Amino acid sequence: MSDRPGSAPVCAESLSPLATATERVLARYDYEIAAATDAIDAAVPGFGGLFDPETSANELADALERVLNATDETPVRDQPTNAGSPVCLYVDGSSRGNPGPAGAGAVLVADDGETLARLGRPVGSRADNNTAEHAALRLGISQLLARCDPERVKIRLDSRTVIRGVWGDPDSPAEEFGAYRRAIDDLLAHVPEHDWQHLVDSDPNPADALATVGADIAALGPGG
Image 1 (tube, helix red, strand yellow):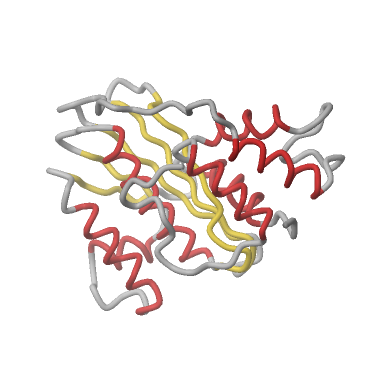
Image 2: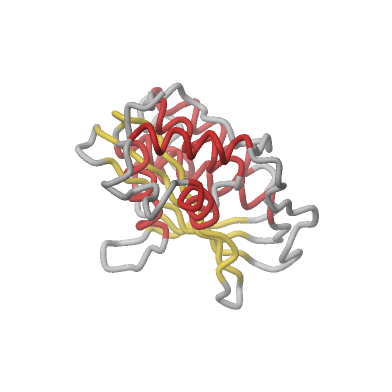
């Protein structure tokens, strides 16, 4: 499991035991959605999988436990990549019901267009969209710092609330997001140079689908 700075939740958002176990698997795979999902699907008996409706909660819980107890090592990135090169970070949050099951997604893209990482995680079983958006930015920056050593980061996001809170009025949004803002500020202090761009609805955001998967995980339950 990853114990890198920024990997643990800032706020105590609630998740079911099943979603919590899935989150632990994601952390082990540094929040790489595809790698974590493949490991879970391979551990489910037969042809089931993480999101297969035919897979029971007990089968999924057993599969998650097998993955977490596996002795084989997961990939470890000892050396930062893209040293000195600009990196673009896309982030997005999703809340089904707002509040409801919520997830965070982030995608790291190299200056030449190569996708470096596709990341996602559940945020809470009943969290709002603003919480998910803050969690997504924190996830993206923390994993960027763990994986890359860029001179400049271009952050792309669609949440005006996050933009105002992180780069605008320090008193907005409400203090309920203060812990996220402080954590994000601490992470950004390690980025030599960064800028942000607000994405409108017509702009593509590759993190959107990953945030949706995170919300799907947050909806899992109960398990355990």
